[in-house]
Amino acid sequence: MDRNLPFKERSAWINASIMLLLAGYYYVKAFSGEPPGPAATLGLLFQVVVFIVVLEIVGHIAITLWDRRTDTDERDKLIEARAGNIAGYVLGFSVVTTIGYALLFSAIDPKTQMCNPTSIASAAHLLVLGMLFSELTKAGAQLVFYRRGV
Amino acid sequence: MAPTAVTNQIRRLRFDRDEMTQADLAGHIGVTRQTVNAIEAGKYSPSLEVAFRIAQTFGVSLEEVFQYEPDRTRK
Picture (spheres, chains in turn green, brown):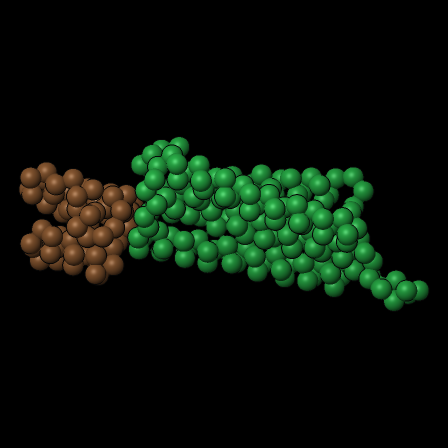
């Protein structure tokens, strides 16, 4: 990694890498093989949150040791705000998609009058993947703005 | 086309001031060296406050540092 990069750009590289890695991990765990039920989904979600926290801390310690300058300015804030705006659209789209999925495919069992647990878990997976892609989009947009200008 | 319609003379002004470095200018105006580099390259238009600080650092008017060229904006 280039030592001349601003702290926020280095941070965006770390975020993009972590989100790409975890989105892939989550997709494989959630959609390969037998679909996990709500309890397993909650466990997977907890796992992903712990991974994010640990990897973000380790990653940011590493980039700070690499170059101790962590100062930010108005350009960093503008880039973060614009990237966050784009990420908001991705998150909104994933929420609407999940609502649509839940309404269309979460059929209620006539005997128990309860939703199919697998459908509920799938809706949760869609939402989690949407959140991960939203963060990935934010980091990606930041990197594009740093390179192309804003 | 560049992302901003604002051009500037910062590089020339730096060299006219005993080859002031981007880091020195950044220190004077309170931004990072990378932001000074982005302003010089026309990749970022600074806020009015930073623009005035740049002009003040060089002791010139704002118009001597920045020029507006609307045809230069990226389509």
